[in-house]
Amino acid sequence: MRPPGSPEERHPSLDSKIVAALDRVGDALAVLARRAAGSHDLSPTQMRVLVRLYYGPPPEAVAGELAREFDVADPTVSDALAALARKGLIERSPDPADRRRHVLRLTVAGQAAAHAVARWTAPAEVASSGLSRAEGEALLATLLDLIARMNAAGMLSVARTCTTCQHFERGSAPGARPVLHHCRYYGYTMGPSDLRVDCAEHTARSGLA
Image (cartoon, rainbow, N blue to C red; front, side, top):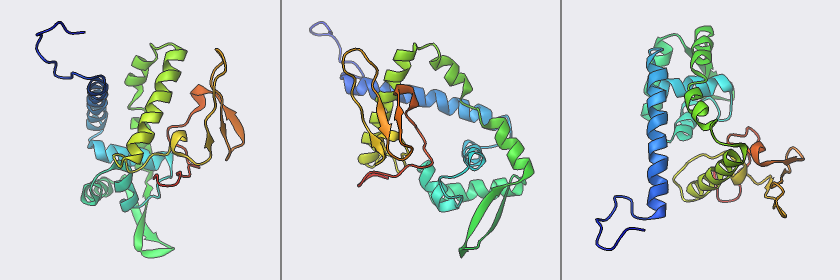
């Protein structure tokens, strides 16, 4: 608690401090992304496109869906795709189901480049590995709940997390036992570290994306 008469802090409330801390984490990840992308003559957006195509859908491999995935304007993704095509890292072909659209695929060179940058977050994972398992699981659960709230408020266009999925049944923890959840899609019980951040089988709950 601040003593009476002390200057007001830049972040006076708990909520503002949480957001400020997340902002600093975001800054660190942005630095890692720029370094990894720059070392392979890519922009961060180009790198994100390569990595997304490398790991496969979702989203559907078309420009509009990628723009929604990254929460950026369509021209930003279009410019990145044009640059990647010039570099020979992706190729575009007409969608057989809709000739007005183009499906994106990695070339052999694109697969190699994507593989090289796919683990660009590894330094941050090393930092988080200093947390105990209980601390890590608690942090993951808190972040997934925050993502769900931000998605519901329209701050995140896409969230394929357990906490935003209609197949997810939240469990409870009687006594000191760990929380056990249930996934109706796969039909299995999930411990705290099994919660998914990006699930290919995600089905948004009503009102969420």
